[in-house]
Length: 323
Image (cartoon, rainbow, N blue to C red; front, side, top):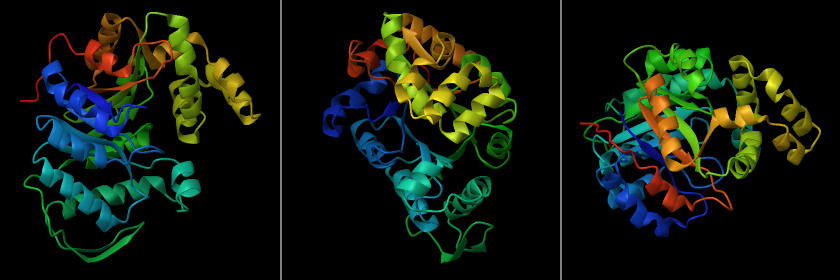
């Protein structure tokens, strides 16, 4: 089992995070995992962490499969793997149409096939093979990595619903989950199968004021769960009726109304909040349900505990070990 943290922390300049990241192993954290949307890229914060805290495992959660060419993506993965031998996991995913098409001007076509083809390509490339292959969604001719890591990084697939979850279990080393409750974990992981790593990003806010914590969490939930892939995920999980008012308000252009329409019970299921001890117990329930690597994603709050203090407060009472 691992115990991870999403980096970089929101609103904290990258250079100012050095001391905290260096302290993570001593606090009981085993991993740091990056996110790539509209902030930092997936690789730079991990490269910094590889120097600041050489004991930590480094993971991307996730690298979009559409926004880098095949060879460039392989080079980035191999370089990080060479910088931190045996301590890298590459999480791959579709990202969203907004990021791929609207922000990057690239077609968001056949996402399932693109993820599958990328996993197959990277598996071969990171093993040192020279690749000439016409995959269903892209082609590569005569590519071979010139910098190979001593140990190929693990490959994981970001997955929400059965098709991608089965792909993660069949062709990757595990799955990366996002925006689900403890109760959702068994239903989702059953499609992945046994013996695979299950990484889950868990949104956490250490704040004993429940109303203030929910107020901080609601806009974040609305921003994510109105994206089509997450909407379909939560409809599949059975939250369609509970979230329908949020979706209606969002479609009408009422962002504040959409956030306000999210029921307390949904906020409490999807965002861990409360005093630090209660938050740690809640995260431990994810592990008991089948998550092998809980990865905390800290939610900023104007009246809550500063993020650096939350990191320290959430340190596991009994540090896990990957050895």
